[in-house]
Image 1 (tube, rainbow, N blue to C red):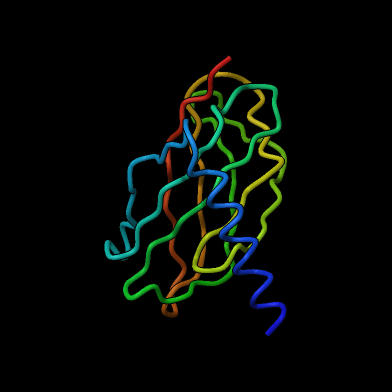
Image 2: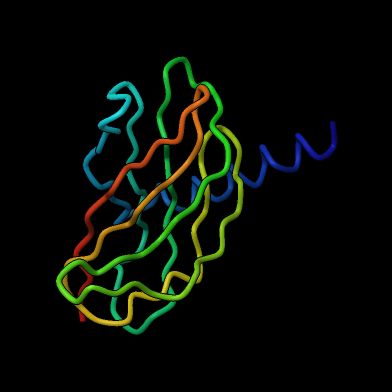
Length: 132
């Protein structure tokens, strides 16, 4: 019970930190395999090249059902490369805090989300613009 209370409090604190001025969400993007499953990113501070960034991944499933095995890959399609692995922290309620996100150069990036839901592997790509 204490762990559940701690995780809930941590989620509330982290999400409330994102709720003040400047907080934005990307548009929702949905899985092509299961269009009822969508995701967006919650961004508190502008994502900039050369800085360790963080953001919240919010995956929305029917009835808020849980998913498992989340992976997050940062990919720059125009350059054909990605970045170092990120750090994931489960915040509960289908939210993950992604930290140590190293966008190494400015431009158009894709945050590739992979996860298992209802017995199938799903993927969603969320495009983001990274500034100088």
